[in-house]
Length: 112
Image 1 (cartoon, rainbow, N blue to C red):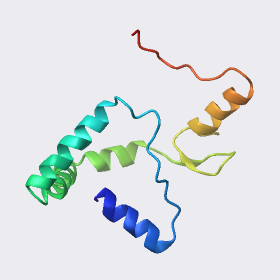
Image 2: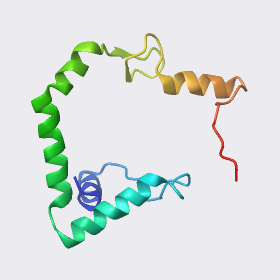
Image 3: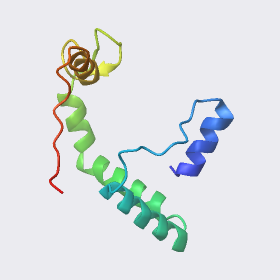
Image 4: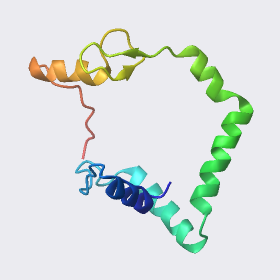
């Protein structure tokens, strides 16, 4: 649940762990939310876990997970074998093909 505990688990189990921050995270809204949740957790230990467990309980109560599971059929990607809801190839492999073909990815840019 917590980042430090997850990292410790990965290290103890010998699972490769990336220590570097994502270079695209600078200025991200999710970083702001993460900082807010961390401050809440520091002042009220257990807040993050309770928030997460309440979220899961509400989803289970409303039956939202079962509706999604019933609608989605997972296939194996023909290229990498990872699960995908798309027929044939997963979105990562399709994007990778576009990059190799020189078409690149369509990226939305913000005006300064």
